[in-house]
Length: 221
Image 1 (cartoon, one colour):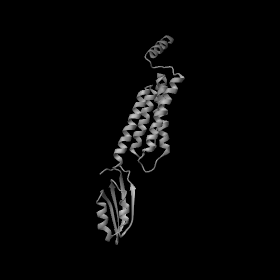
Image 2 (cartoon, one colour):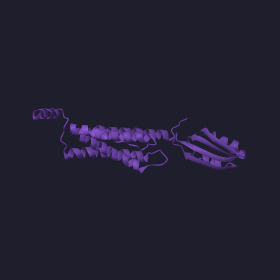
Image 3 (spheres, one colour):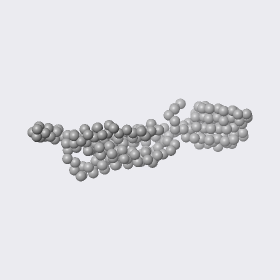
Image 4 (cartoon, one colour):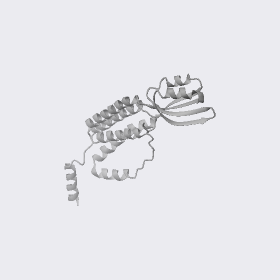
């Protein structure tokens, strides 16, 4: 029996399925994962498009990168431990709802960075994280000019033609129109340069109020 165990252990070692983790290697893995996680966190924080930023989710990106790297580094050092880790992780269930689909992409980026760093592919982890973050930043600035807004205007019926004329000067789509007596409340989905739109609408006689809200929905038009 001992002979069989020794033979199996020797074969596993020769296959590279068991590695001795040294302190410099551990520091290199965790340091690379931390650097990638911090970069992902900074990009997510400063280029966030949603209405309400969650600092907890930003910290989760860093923690998930480090945790995945720690797990991969551990299971890659011992095949027996890897089998036990798979069984343990299979019972973990995450129920936190992710509201923005873009958050899922950042979470997967953190996991991918942790996987590559934990596997010892430090160069790939760094280059991959930097490249994907750069692609996101480029597309962020390309899509910034196409930011969508919800425009809510309340006006008297006598100002309807002037309001339609001003709104018609930009790209828009009617969402709702509610009439009550001599008053009308209209909601438009607008995009483009809307900096002076509110001032122009409020200067129209008969317009009671106008509100412009950033629209973060998934629908495109």
